[in-house]
Amino acid sequence: MGITVETTPNPRAMKFNVGSPVGGTATATSADGSDKRIAPLFGIDGVMSVFMTADFVTVTRAEDAEWDAMVPEVVAVLEVSFD
Image 1: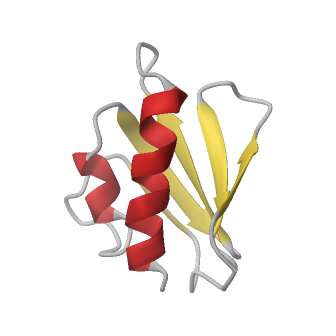
Image 2 (image 1 turned 60 degrees about the vertical axis):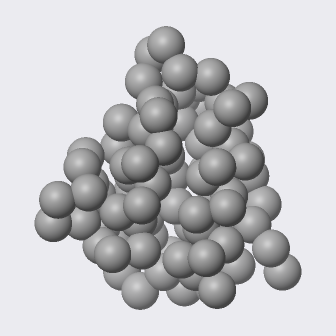
């Protein structure tokens, strides 16, 4: 199916639909101790926090980060992590 991206009411957060169950609810603000599937997202400049539940992952960016640069990187990580 591929990853689809949606805006949220929060302009600093984007919803990434992965198309399959993520296996539970998790929230992380760093790679340390986070689910191994979302830990690589913290290697992307500007990622502040990650939330996952149901069949989607929500990424919150730093105030000075730009979605145009981040979205393709987030999608690439999620495509590998939730293949």
